[in-house]
Image (cartoon, rainbow, N blue to C red; front, side, top):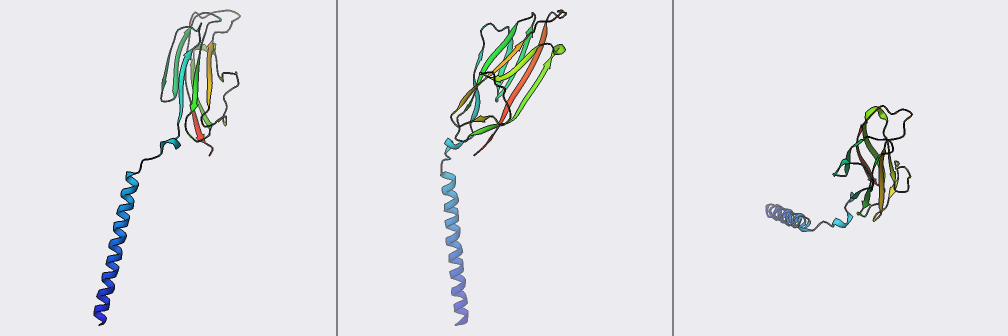
Length: 167
């Protein structure tokens, strides 16, 4: 009699393990089939790059939210300027965590600025709310010199902004 009870208990335990295994497999399969709601994705992008009228020739590229610029200015008062939108199309508000700016400036004569369209400097912790777009302005110019000794000056600039979620 005891032997039969032990066999019965063993079969009940095996049945419970079997049912639990089937439920686990069904649960995992259901999760794999569910579509991920991409509305909640992190989605900050640079777009709408526009060179300002009157700018001198330059080579500019936008790849993976990094802007690269090579410009050659030959005369005082010449400039190269462009605007660029940074858009937060995700559902998380974000703030600037890091500004990566690399500049190679011949003789350090050419001036450059990286600001918002209203000439406010871009700074760490600047807020970019969900659904918001801000316009960035980059300007490189050849200032007036007491004595001009260089015919042409080159400037190479690379920048990107790193954002973090504040939600």
